[in-house]
Image 1 (cartoon, rainbow, N blue to C red):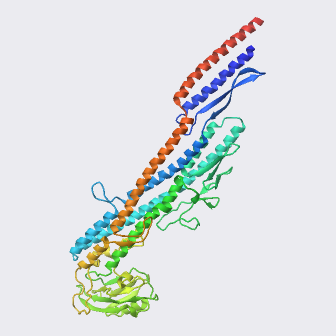
Image 2 (image 1 turned 180 degrees about the horizontal axis):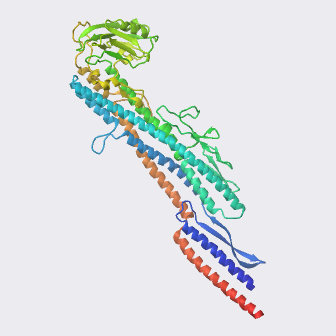
Image 3 (image 1 turned 120 degrees about the vertical axis):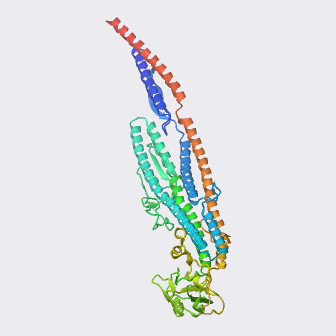
Length: 586
């Protein structure tokens, strides 16, 4: 070997070792950087005419298990979904309250129903007590507010999910742009013969973040670029970025729904005009869609079933009674038209009383005599001392013509419509609450203003009434007891949300909703722990295979420094030899 070749070999050893030191130093510096993998400088010997001339670095690479990486990304999708589900299940459980608190009292609707039952029990014992009547109305109004507030909380959660979908879609689009940019940088570096290892780490980290948002499939092309698709096969990045579109709703109510066919209040996720919402099966976006469109609406439907059934049950009993003294007028809650066909049988009694409940006039009407609502209203209007009409809003009003008198009604044997309701119930003349769902469950405003209008008395149903006789007493335990029995007895509930049709009490039905929500929260917490463990184990496996071991790198760095020192010493020796040789030639 010539002296020049030896010196070249020593210099190459020096530069090669210097490169190795740089790689090890970078490994140590980036040991805690998310997504960073251990880099290795590949070293090869060089020759010239069959004679070794030293070493060179042929490339800087990282060894990442692609299959394990995909499994980790799948685990990230599952973890993203589990995290969202756990968060919303916990928030929903808080909104529903608890049946039993730490102090032994609960905060749930079931507890409020129990308080209402207690108020009715006391009222049944002393129905003439204005204090107890007021207490019942106040307790009922508290329950109504709780139903509305709980419904509003559910819709707030749906609105939050809708907004978060928008944020996650924006983030996913940004990540697709990042991956596309890294694709271009990787292809350019590869074409120039430069290392792409760090760029690939960055791209893998972006794919991991994207996987947390939604489940994806991705493939590497021969050029080194990555193409990304939804699990359903829709291209998100195939050389061109296909951004996802989503329009967050300004307001979300119980009536707000999403439909893949379009023309719905809530938006789906689209790509190039195609709705891909159903293609996203995992990740935080899928879990948010599920909360917005399935989980939370199911609980809302159960709550609505409770509210509507409760309103119907209470109103049905209240319409068999009368306030004492009777109010000057009764206005129904059912919208009708004078031209509407009327189908009724049996007899109803309408009476006019003075302010002490003494009879002024009355008449029993045979409902089978009337073909239309207008015919019925005309008959009511023809009763002595009575004025009846259908308002512009379609509500029937029956009033005493004298300001000092009142109107009382006894449904007797009346049966109207397919359900055979009593006339007062059919028109809603003595309703105490209104509700089309939990969101608008409310106590009648006139009753809140004057609790003496609570219909806990009854109009005398004796065959013949005498003018001047008291026909509406101060209070009747019958109505209060019927309200109590209705509230605490079994009712027929239709299937709603995730609950099947059943017969049970209102309190039991409310407890079932709360228990269901609590069980879901427990299940979500357990699932989250499981997904965290799976993701952590996979991340540890990748780290073990591809991550930086500080101890190993430190030891290697020490070794490389020794090799560098040896190479430097060899260069120095060879230089001295060169100088000596040159000196002999002078």
